[in-house]
Length: 432
Image 1 (tube, rainbow, N blue to C red):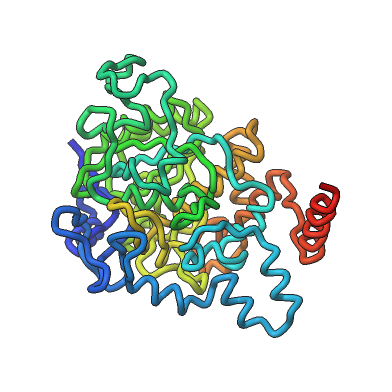
Image 2 (tube, helix red, strand yellow):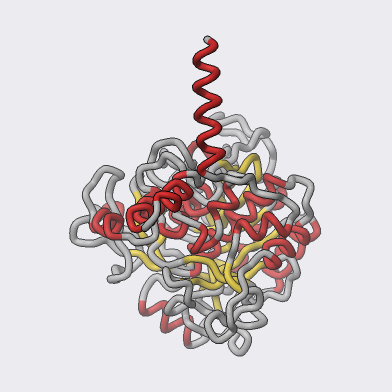
């Protein structure tokens, strides 16, 4: 049986994947810093690196806090550095979620990284079901709970498989690995990916996802060590499709293709479902040395590479002018951690999740759009970059451009309109 594992969580796994061995896994790296360590009982199987930092709780002082203070790509920092009051007013008019960690989310701070602030003027999400097929998710995390999908055919806690799908009490998704209805994360990778896609925005807690509002279906197909079977991944995709997912996020990569996996992706296509796959973190040209599922020929699949803060291809991100469709920010991404806190992770896992979140915004704005319309618009709206800088097919993710390509015009947000709204509110208050 073919095996998969979370995209290279350790140096050993990196070597294994680079050698072409049949290892699969989640596409990101994470580590605790000295000022933000986990307890031994909750430690993830991902090896410590110097690239990322995590927090044991939302309020704990961490190295991430220092990084946030110095981050140059937030709207607030841009306002301070601005040389004119006009630029400060324009920045303040952008949609800004009231979440305390938002200032550290450099990729969402303005339109420079991925065009999300323009996109938010058209859509912040809705009732779009997105399946996170991964290591599970923290089902009690306060920033994820409001956006968890609920299986209306299942009665919670009655110990009965009400919908006869083989999973008892699969209220928010399914655990394919253990065969039950509780896809609780024991690794942390899936929790982080879920938060990038759709941590609740504007709730004055933690971070925001690309989609402020979304229905996150959690499907656990990888074990606590970030590894699992290709059969389980295919089963997870089928579960997602059968239960109404519009988009399936696969932040996994491996050296082997598999007929069963390809069949599951094709079944998703037949049901109108898009699949987003991480390109992998081995720095490989997938045109020459394919990795899967990113290199799958399926027309309903979008393969995603990772970029850094400068917009360049991230160190270690796999690429391919034909095999990889688009890039998205994947370095130093803050999101939800499976101990209830927040952490930084890097990799194509996070980049894929940015694309998935953008597709959720698009599907919410155009509920009747087909998978091919969503895919075509996302790629048409991408920002072209010289192939020498970004060796991928379409360019860099531009969420605002994707919505425009779908025929959705973001509302204008200027200092004048903001002032007009304030005057209107004052006038209404005066009449009372």
